Image 1: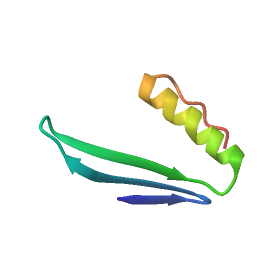
Image 2 (image 1 turned 180 degrees about the horizontal axis):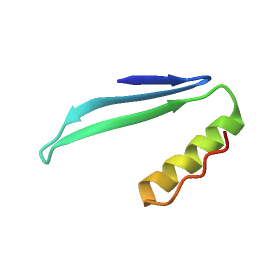
Image 3 (image 1 turned 180 degrees about the vertical axis):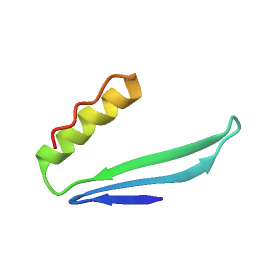
Length: 56
């Protein structure tokens, strides 16, 4: 699966089957370092269950 948002591409795909289940990879590709930093912060908050603020 791949989603494209302006200069940010989010790819999610199954990588490998293990004894316990499956490994799934999440990759975010950006054009700039600031986009990469923002994506990293948003993912960290999402994983930790924190509210993500949108700056539209």
